[in-house]
Length: 134
Image (cartoon, rainbow, N blue to C red; front, side):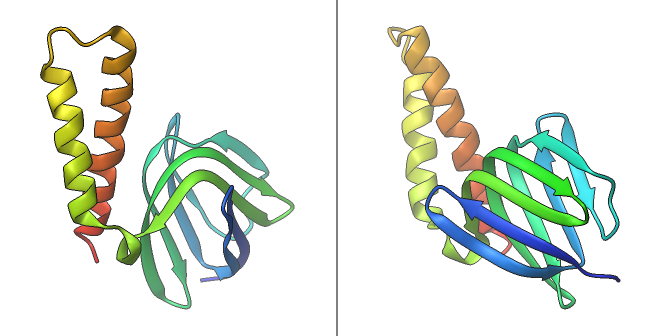
């Protein structure tokens, strides 16, 4: 496969800057696959698994929020959160899932608390799923 230039930058800094043959990410409109010579494209990111294929090696990550941009053949992924599978603490994700479940079961929880717990639950489930693919 023909490589393209990929940059992954989060608020915490540069995660990846190099060649890639394929990028798979979850956008707010569904999954997107980026290959070399993709048309110019911009999309908001959702919460889900991201896959980067580089040098024939497939790496999986949890990718949440942000933007994807393809301009002139260069691809820039600007997620709010991006964690490679090998860096995810599955036990921490499970604890976060349990806390979210407790709030979601609480009949006295405010609407704001319920919405935050739903988002926390979704993030925890994405992290657990990606971590299981180490």
